[in-house]
Length: 125
Image (cartoon, rainbow, N blue to C red; front, top):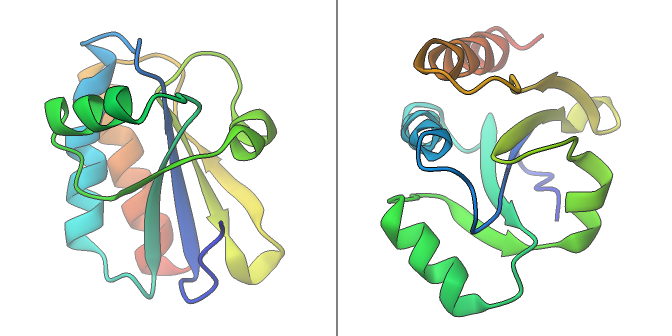
């Protein structure tokens, strides 16, 4: 599931019951997806929802612009607590997690997540 052709992978975890205020952060993930070349950052939405119609409705409702996959394995391996949340993985460093999104979902924390990921990827930490 990890995209080896990209230096960083950003997994964005979500469930179909995520709160409306929380899902506003997908705007920032869509911006990262369009702002940064795929060779530097590959974004994948990961869900544990088994019903594909619910997944498709959620993707459409939140205007998600990146690929979405169902993976219980990744969900269990990387999530802590509520979704949505994201983890930035450095593929070149044995898939080490170098950033995890903030648990508190405010507009300022969502903007900070965008800024931090953008800074890390563009400066190749």
